Length: 282
Length: 294
Image (tube, rainbow over all chains, first blue to last red):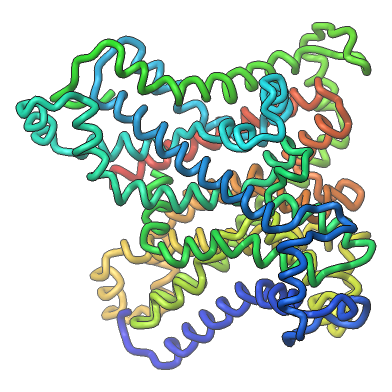
């Protein structure tokens, strides 16, 4: 800040408060809706003050599901989402760490080719090759399984680049010292490189957990068995049926539960989140 | 390519370490992309008995199809709408945060969390807020004399999906603008202030030009986001309607491939999309190379 202008400072705060309110408003309305009874949404206006049905609504969707929409209990869908998000985040970090290690610390034929093959994946998001990818997964018998939900999304060029970039900044003296002491490549990787990468791993974990949890199109394609629905894609099925008999209180309770885990991760690990976001764009 | 001075010698190990990444890349990325490319030159009859090599017929049909033109046009409006709305909002908020001192951290925390909300969830929440019968925003709009209905009005539907998609993206742009503002040398701004330039003048002559690399980078990122990551917003709300008015390219690929089962056309569309991603990625990388020189 250059000069003290009380009016401009006041304006800044007003703009920010307005921004925070606008950003939070949809979520506020969703939370309120999840505390009301079904009759509050028949006519008139969306209620803006909490109602008495909070426990009812959440207990109902968590454990018995909404019978009319054929959706399983949310507890099951949340578990599926958690398994998928963790498998994607941990899997991506693991395979990127070892492939970046191979590219930086070894010299071998086809190294360049391997690097470019990984690079190309940046240019092929799932959305542009849906049909053939679905076919591959179907042919491998991976529909309706956790493997089908997570493995096809595990390859990641960004994570590999991030670790490659980081490994290049690790001083050569460390490697030399390790070799003098008789450490092989795997021991060096486990005892020196991994501990040094901790912050980067945490930062990437936040970003990738959110990425995995928020997947929509992929679970929509590979799951037909409600036992494997994830919560983010399950909402759509609930809202669709709810259009006929609007059970908005239950849909919004699901919405609140679906966004809770990633939002908590971002708020709790904000420092790592910002680092991960900025670094993964380099 | 850069490498280490000290390296390990082992013939098999590097391949073993690369194997998982490369196997997944080949099976789930390269092979399907190749299949899409091959399929885009084939025509299959309705029952999948016969396939014929048709050269560029799928592409010719695609580019002659008024529905595809419409989808291209819709995508352009949608992407630019999302990019403009989320960038402008984020820039205003970032400028405001730049003026606050102690409260900056609190405001940042309160503004960044929507990044974690899934696009589908964002879509459903705005769908609810804009619900023509009971929604709050249509109620407010009606008092202003506007009759909102995204089920029948193309314009309303487009506004709905733009707002829902932008809402989620503000936090991302905000963080990058805050970082960009922090990187502007303080001495420049102070020198201008001493010379008598007010806040507005300083913004347009110093801050905005110095922020332009960040803005350009974010513009590309936002267009990529709007083109490829917003499938869920569309699918969870308007499903491309009413009357194709929100049928963006990625949604059309899905619709033609899985619902219409027009594999040749869907594959040709995939190839066009891949070309677009490649162009955008190259632009993004060239920008990063340029930034390094600063």
